[in-house]
Amino acid sequence: MSVRVRFAPSPTGKVHIGNIRTAIFNWLFARHTGGEFLLRVEDTDIERSTREAIDAMFECMEWLGLDHDGEIIYQTSRTSEHIAAAQQLLAEDQAYYGEPDENGKSALLFRIPWDTDNIPAVRTVGTVELELHPESPLNVSAAGVEFAQPSRKGKAMPAAATLAGFKALKAFDADNKCVFELDGNLDAIRAGEKFTVEGAVKISFTRREVFFTDMIKGELAKPFDSMKDLVIVRGNGTPVFHLANVCDDVFQHISHIVRGDDHVENTYRHILIFNALGYDVPQYAHMPMIVNSEGKPFSKRDGDAFVGDFREKGYLPQALFNYLSLLGWSPGDDREKMTRDEMVEAFMLERVKSSAAQFDYTKLQNMNGMYIAEMSTDDFVQWATCYATAAGIDPNAPLFRTVAELMQSRTRNAESLVDWKYFFSDELLYNDKPIKKQLKNQDIRDGLTAYKNALANLNGYTPELVEKSIRTVESAAGLDEGKLNQPLRLAASGTNSGADLYLTMALIGKEKMSARIDALCRYFDENLSSGN
Image (cartoon, rainbow, N blue to C red):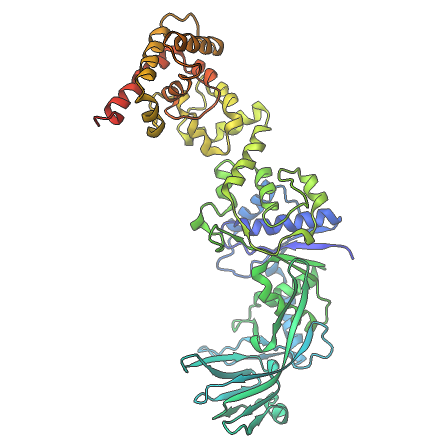
């Protein structure tokens, strides 16, 4: 069977990384199998599906290189086909109109099927008994069965489910006498009669369930007695997602439905709708949800959650694609950084994990850094130029390109450019802890003063001269080799980490280094010495 998968977003806002990961998995599966990756815009939520949101979704897909096959299908363009399917179900008694609302309009509901002998996805589990709350009536109608069960404290807990969930239903009173039997009243109930049974304390029925084998999660099942008949056409005449989704999957000849596991509950119902309309059921694969460190669904509260957020912060499309591909999937070995072709070759749905995938910013930043490190100098400078102003750096500054070349291997995203500011400004943000540790040592303090004095006699300030001058001062001051490196880095940048020290100091220049040594010592005296 030719593989045909689809990405079917509802464009009602910004594109969440969970949605775009669904697109990536579908794309990889299609390209791995030589199948087709189709795009369907499920825009039936007219009020929230804006042109702006649709265009933003297209832009995200283009930015990530998610090319689709065939024409784009807009769900609203197929409303007449959805309504025709609903009328077919109504004519075959597989749908019915519910109670009218305050405006006198009735929604059309899909009837969970009573006769399931010819539905391969439905099986009998066995006889089940449930205790009922004796003060709550048992109501039985074509719309379903309503009852209440007792809580641990004896309170009534209402429950309701489709009529099909209670095959061979019998109700018993406190004397274990059968006070209601569904089989003898089924025709009357189907004809519209309703039954209310008082005093029942127990029911028994034959449990049936709908089941399917998920390509990721294995076999999944749901009992009919935990399901309700579902609305497929609203009272205003517009089709609901469940019906439109199934109809469009049929129309597009979808062979595999790969989506988030928040849709598992929908799948049970959709399988029954496929059968009711007379169509084969596609294969399903439900991907694990993306969660935060607490195991809860990842959202904006946890940080960046939309594709646009990552783009604005300087994440490269190939890095985000690579990271999201590995969020819940493994190539079967220890590889993490992979080319797109390598991912296509290795991708198999059977290797998608069934457990939730935890989002890890550090891993994404490190991966983005690896891709940034591979950029050509020209491309990196162009990339950095786009984000420099927001980081408080003038991209037209004379040293910008030189600093960019030096800092490229240390850059993880656009926020990293903030760490370049000490090359362009003398207003440093000091890291107190390492400064206090270094400058409380008088020998280090004296060494810094000696180095500052030596700067005036240097002819030039190349990285080689910088290193030589530091070693000379250390030797004269009786300091071990390298003892001044960290204090000088603190003077140069205000922090204890950064790029090559000698290159950094050479770029800053000896005049500025002299002033920064003074500024560091003054900062220590005024803020961190023992008397403050």
